[in-house]
Image (cartoon, rainbow, N blue to C red; front, side, top):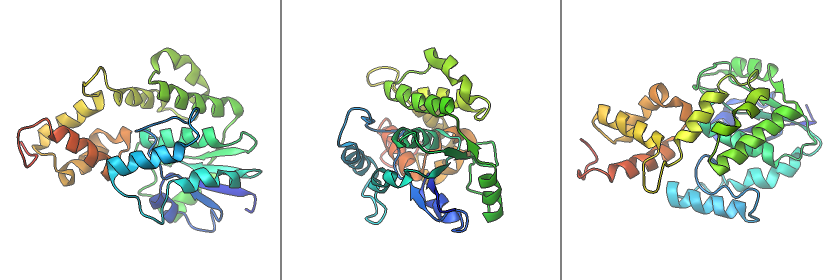
Length: 252
């Protein structure tokens, strides 16, 4: 398909999808659920994002820059765009960001995981990915605008009063209400207060008796999978919570 381009949420997924399904491709490597989101105001958005990721998650691999998506979006012009994004908060905020950067002139398709939970594409083989591609949903303009509005509200840290506006999405995204609640849980309640997410994560740590990411990360899929956090993100939040204890080794 010469006039198509595929955008993947991460290198792991991109590596799973065979070339015969997606020849022209871009990878969204950002983590838009956290950090500065001056998409509508800032001319140096990429620099702000790279600085944030470096400060919080460490150096990025030199051959895997986040700028490749933002600089490559012009390649989407005049092509059908297939967006491979899962249902969790991490993937969704990146998904909304991609839609923000598309010009609106393209036909946009959402490739969704066959699994309706938050496990995503991770367990899929090439055959299952081909099925998912064949079931891609073409987004109409109302749906595209609704997703883009979710990004704006995420930036403003407000969702509750806008619930009626998600109606165009409910048929294609049954999880949308739950995802918005999870988004709200990431926001701090007041100055210096833990977010609901951090409180939930702290509860998991207490049950496991540890802040060790090797013990906590496997629990994320079963208890906090809706957030979709990767290991570097989780490690950052665990380190932040560990500072609340008096134990040097980070255990209870």
